[in-house]
Image (cartoon, rainbow, N blue to C red; front, side):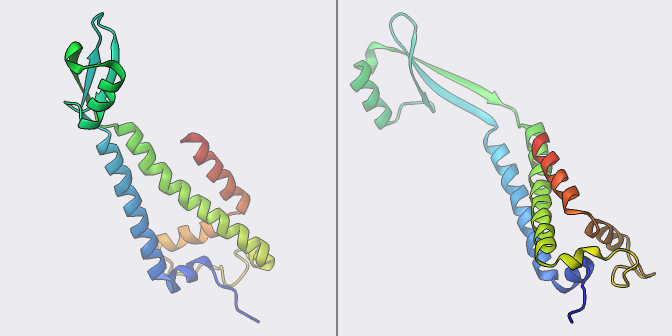
Amino acid sequence: MSEKRTMLQVIRENKTVFILIAVGLFLIELEIFAIAAMRSGREARLQVLNDRGILIYEADGTQLTDFNKYYFEKTFGPLENHQTRLVTSVEPFPFRAWFAAAIGVPVGAILLFGFAVRAYMALVYPEAGHGGLTDPANAPDGSETRFERVIRKVSQFNIFVIGALTFLTAVTI
């Protein structure tokens, strides 16, 4: 018969996997920051107006590219017959959106992963979920650190609690 392992023992035995998960979460955080930074800053748009001052064409940048100029002239006629106007705007860094995504995406991913693992464990190994503090494998010992106590408490969560937390996280984002 195989011996029952606690979540803390799994973490101790698979440090490399958990380090890779931490690096992956850091890269996700970096990507979220980069996307937020790319959406902020100065943006220029070139607008083309007809003789009545009505906007008929708009393109990104300070001048029309060859393709945009060709497309415009095929559709509206020569560019020289129209007025052009350069409009610049400054978009501030979206701090609230970045902060919400930087917290919500990794937490939601971890909760979803935890829910999937706990559901798998409950379906495949139904006897593994019945051990509580009376089980010697889950009993706290004097050498436990604060982190180990938190992991032990979290590993005792019911899969429905993890699913509810995942759902609440997804709804609030």
